[in-house]
Image (cartoon, rainbow over all chains, first blue to last red):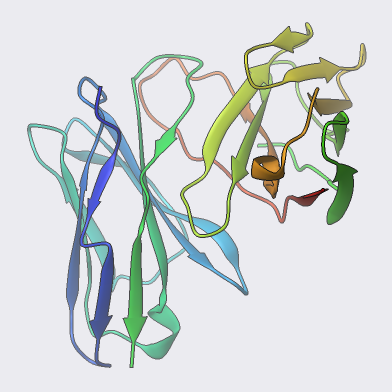
Length: 113
Length: 114
């Protein structure tokens, strides 16, 4: 079974631009979560989607948004990029059940210049 | 979710057992203990989880104290490839199909030395 895939793996953008990152969960997994990882703040939860609905949201500004499609694939978008948005963006998926582990993708390394 | 406390770093000799402690003194009855690790620049990897009984899988063993206020992850024969940041996370059982958020702390950087 293929793992969680994220595209692109690396991205360089300029301040003020917007960016869209994509995540394909493991087949059969219906929940997708996004995390941001920076050296200063560590791993921080962005949001979680299940059945095309955002179920949980972390403490990030409205410039960060996401969506989930009917095939469980998910995208996250960051508008008006700032230098501080440079980070590793990780996507994780899991089967929807009581006690489950999350499976993480390799991440997208975003650099904002 | 309950807060966890882990030492910031530990060293271990290759081939020896690595014992990584985690304190979760405010854990509640429906919260499980999960362990993940993150090898440099990769996504976190699930290792093991448990509620109150000790657990073992092909990667590691998890020992949870009787009062559940602390736990230890044991890598029985550490290799150089086990060098990573290890995260201990506590999270409630979920029956509603939502809220799979994981709250990561700083974790423990385990360095396995040759």
